[in-house]
Image (tube, rainbow, N blue to C red; front, side):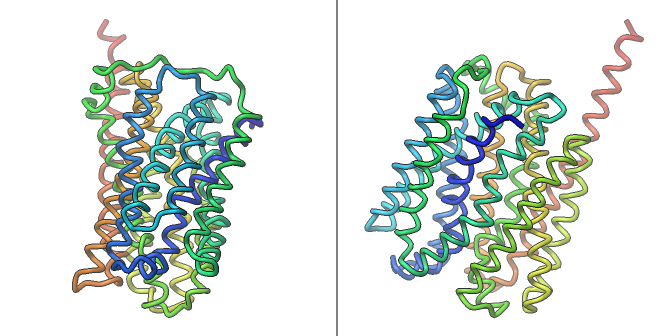
Amino acid sequence: MPLALFALTVAAYAIGTTEFVIVGLLPTVASDLDITLPLAGLIVSVYALGVTFGAPVLTALTGRLGRKPLLVGLMALFIAGNALAALSPTYEMLLVGRVLSAFAHGVFFSVGATIAADLVAPDRRASAIAMMFMGLTVAIVTGVPLGTFIGQTFGWRATFWAVAGLGVVALAAIALLLPSDLKRETPAGLMQQVRVLGSGRLLVVFAMTALGYGGTFVTFTFLSPLLQDITGFSANMVSLVLVLYGVAIAIGNLVGGKIADRDPVKALAVMFALQAAALAVLTLTAPSPVLALVTLAAIGFLSFATVPGLQLYVVDMARRHRPAAVDVASALNIAAFNLGIAAGAWIGGLVVASPLGLGATPWVGAILVAGALGLTVLSGALDRRERSQLGAAPELA
């Protein structure tokens, strides 16, 4: 793997920390700002919506910019957003800072995924994307637990200052390590962008991404209160559990990338089936500390094992069906990831506020992932039909 991928990984680490660290800080933020837990959960949803709508629009608007200057500018915006969050005196101002960071997040991963894929040989693309996304997984292993500890010890604002510092390191890594002559896809016109959303095949993949990734966030958003109120862990133990969860995610990301290199659709179908089963099982194992840890490790492994395959699949699908708008399609898939997070966090908040309570979040999430499994099977069938039609065309000619 080229050294330039390291710069993308460092930036992904900073972005992953700010995205996921709020999960461990929800009880602390809710108490400090005097808001309810479901309202605090909207901090996750608002960030995800900022990525969802910011990624495709800003990626299209910045299509003519050089890739390296664009990434440097995105990290500067990321630093500003986290500094504003750290300084925010109110809930509303915190949301504004989160949205600014989310805009940087969305464009970075949509552009970064295509850069990572182009830096390596064709048979290493999924692994290259997995390496970039490893920044997210390492952030969950180290950044999120450490950020949670900092927030519980020095206040949640200190966590955002620390994340802004990570952004400075990431900006320097991009400036120093990323080549200046990066390949750039031809900028997509407005009608080409609309046509991406008009592709039924791509819409199926976007829906797979949203349901498969979002299903886990019905539970993950409220994992901290679930572990404290149902499993019986102390607040300090939650940070250690997040380390275990993050290690499982890191392993899953690497394994998922290698599996997806061979057959993304088949790999995704198997992983979605296992992911739905693991979430359903957590409903039963949550009251037991040991069994809950085992189940959470499985959920963590599977939740990120699907990421490289989904991103590779949408890039390949775009090159087949919308070759003039690959960057936009990639951005829309990043948007789909975050639309799933927003929907999952919102649905989780509704479940927590309902008579079902915290304990129902795992099986509700399992239903969403089962929907992703159904769409994956459908998409695989459509792929096979396309291949058979292409094979028959020369004979007919």
